[in-house]
Length: 276
Image (tube, rainbow, N blue to C red; front, side, top):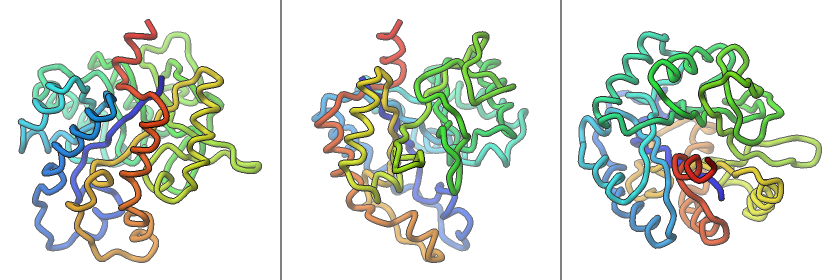
């Protein structure tokens, strides 16, 4: 069984877009696609974890009810999609407490925006422990252009703030690293986002098969705005940022759909409960 996380965020939340927002009004648009997303999961008989930005629930609490009533899970994705590097321990701790109130304590999992958990922001693990969280899924075990931490841990392991890249027997937080693949002599991130849209689908199939053969859950993600590109406005961005954000955006939905039809996926808490 593999793991599916939906990073549920608005069109103005991605880091590469935030840098260039000027006078645009931050109206909620992506939330209009929640029914499409839930219908899609229902048709594929798949449960997912929605790592949701807290301010979305503040504005539209009905989103939370819809997700939970369909048997899915909600996880924390910070309150405003700020990377951990822009937060302090105290600010993050306060955000965790706020999200806990918004969700009535339903969240036990976290994913850092733009996978911003690294050696300099590992204090976030201490905050998750202090707030009784059970797991994290913020690490891509290979260093890339925007994120990632070099690690040999490909499957779930116990994580501690003092050394986030390898298993620690005293860890209280279970880490679920994102899917990677060996490409020639290099390991590359392949779990979702731009990589899902840009790489050959056969490469993803082979990577998932390899993880399953080694009895490791393939942890994948997709952004809410990739599932409902019809609600995603085109922002004027420099070439590189524009390419990473919008390249093949209309192919994201059919590609992840083909993956769900070929392999079994579930939410993080359902996986943990079954593993125990």
